[in-house]
Length: 242
Image (cartoon, rainbow, N blue to C red; front, top):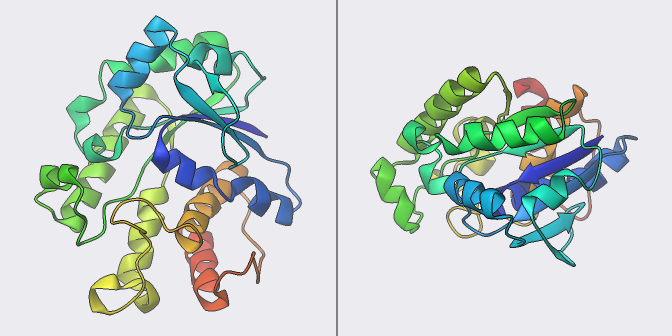
């Protein structure tokens, strides 16, 4: 399976462990992420129209070794899956997606008529996040989560694409597993209030992508040097949620 994401740092988070997680499950998944930090759908649209080679081309969760344009990336391989997403602070604002996502989807379909396109449902910020975009949701995590749910559902239905529900898994962990109840002393899945932690936070996202895109449950008791109890909670939540 070959996956290309037209994204930003949130798809970077999701890709980090996907290749190695898949390998641990006997599945060959190759990934590429088009990275510009904080990149919105509008900026992707502008870059595509102007053929700007502004993107770090991150392969299999590793650091980039070259810059690339969207058009070049689309034609670099016979991608099975292409993902799109809105920048995090606008992800719960439905009107911010158009016309940019429809235009990008058309470009993807022209270049890769057999590829399946997914919309990445990203996660709400941590309760004490200092990101200025948190104000779009009254600095309320639950409000942001619900708005992201509503917006991505509406957009996915309009475009007839599927959703990768990373935001649902993250919120499920926060609300239903005491270990991740940050408000009451649990660990945060975010390292800075909005990006996922380098270990278990990113693993939760990669695990969500793996199960969503392969339809397979994860069978794993150890991964890298991650905390086994937290890892087990994440795997159980992902397997039961999806």
